[in-house]
Length: 98
Image (cartoon, rainbow, N blue to C red):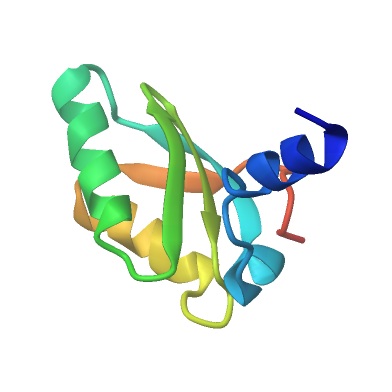
């Protein structure tokens, strides 16, 4: 079929963009005290339970996420990691933080 049909077909598969997509800020954390898969799970669960937070990656010693600063403060995220039993710090130079 022609180019117009292909364009319309492609549009059907795009993810809608919301206002939250524009205000999300990226945050990278260095996390101490993690040593195993259980630690990864505990940190990931603690972060995923926070409204306004979207977790991209959690590995031993690090986490990458995006958060909505209107809904959630960066300090709340650090506190959630601490409540899970680990110490988190913002990685210098990571997006969204000064």
